[in-house]
Image 1 (cartoon, one colour):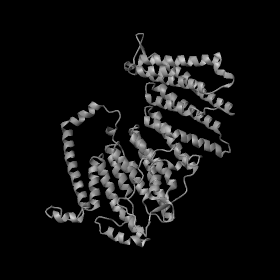
Image 2 (tube, one colour):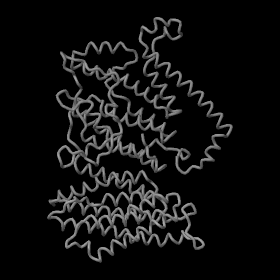
Image 3 (cartoon, rainbow, N blue to C red):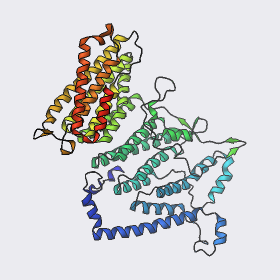
Image 4 (cartoon, rainbow, N blue to C red):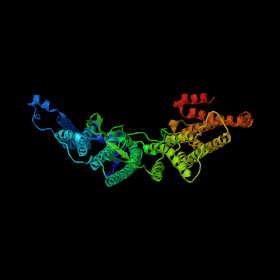
Length: 540
C-alpha cells in the first residue's frame, strides 16, 4: 500500500511562496474548475446525508410521509453510503463528520458479525441475531472491516492533503479496529493475523518515511509514526478471543490507543512509567457501534481476551534503535526539523533505559551513580554528535537551541536537599555534570567569536532584524552559565569551601559573564528588553 503513495511536490506545505500559490488559485481556468468541483461535492454531500437519514428512519416515520418521493422506497444499504463517503472524501478529505459517517457505516455492517459469532456458542443471543438479520444492508460475513480498502482510501486522501487531521485519525482507527476485532479461535489463525498486522504496520512505517521525505516537518506524519510504533509494540501483547480470560474490550482498546504501554512499569510497583507516549485514540474509540450486552439471569456476557507474551527485550530495543536512527537521519537532513528533535527527546530516556538494562544483563550492579554517569555520557554524545554540528551550521535557527536547553535540563543530576554518606559520589556526579557545562561554554564562546564578525556593521552592533546571528548563542551561553552557578551553589562541600576566595572568584566570574550575555541581548533583541531585565533581577 505504501509503495503506491507518492505525495505530489506541489502539495508540500513548507517552502511555498504564498503569493504564487494565491495567484494560481485566482487564475480564471483554475477558479472555474474549483467552482465546478465545489458544486459536485455539495451535491454528493447532500445526497449522503439524505440517504443516511433514510437508513436510520424508524419504520413508523414513513406512515405519515406517504407523499414523499422516497417514503415508499426501501431504505438504502450501508454499502451505498460507504460508496458515497468515498466519493466525497476523495474530493475533500477534511470534514470530520463525513469520516464519522463512514465509520458509522463500517460498524453498522460489522456489528452483526460479533452477534452471529457469539450465537454459535451462546444460544441466549440467537433471538437477537434473528432481529439483527431483519435490518437491511447487514452482512453476515465473519470478516472485520476491509483494512486494505480503508488504507487505500486514506492514502489517496492524504495525497490531496497530507495534513488532514480527520484522515490521519481514520487511518489510526482502521488499523486498531482491524487488529482488535478479528474473531480468532485457533493458534494458527492467531499467528496469521499477527503476521498480517505486523506486515501492514511495517509498510506504514515505510509510508511515513516517504511522506517525511517530501515534507520532513509534517508533524501529523511524525505523530502517526509514533502511533504505528506504539501499536507495533503492542502486538507483542496481542490477544486471543476467549471466554475465560480477564482482559475486557475496553482494556484491549486502551492497549492499542497509541500509548507505549508495552514498555511496562518502572521498578517501583504500580508507578506509572514516565517514558510512555500519550494515547492518540480515546478509550473505547474502536468499540462497535450499537453493540449490546445481553444478560443471562443478571450476568453480562462480555467479550474478553487472553494476553499473550510481550515482546522480547531485544525486539523492543531494535524497535527503539530504529526510531532513534531515523530521527538522526532526519535531523542531519534538516536542522530545523522540530518534530524530529521532539521525537528524539521522547526516545532519549528509553535509549538510556536499554543501555542500563544491557549493563545489568552483563552482570553489573546498577546504582544511582551509574545511572547519573550514563545519563551524562548520553547527554555528551548528543552535544558532540548532534547539537554542536547544528548550532555551528545554523546558529540563528532556534530548533537545535531548544533541544540544547532540553539536554542541559535532562542531564542535571537530581540530588536531595540532605546530604548523607554518599557525599563523595554526589560530588563526583556534580563534577562530571559541570565538566560537560564547561565544555559547552568553551564551544559557545568560540561560536560567538565567529558570529560577532557578522553582527557588527560600521562599528555598531546590528539588531536582530538587521541580520544579527548571535542572539541564540548568547541565550544558550547564558543558560549554561546559569546552570553552572546553580550547580555550584546547590551542592555542599567539605570545610566550607564556598567561603574561600577561589570559589567566590569562580562564581563571580560566571555571574559577570552571564550578565554580559544579557547586556548584549538587550542591544540585539529590542523586542524582549523586559524579559532580559527580569533574568538580570533573578540572577541577583
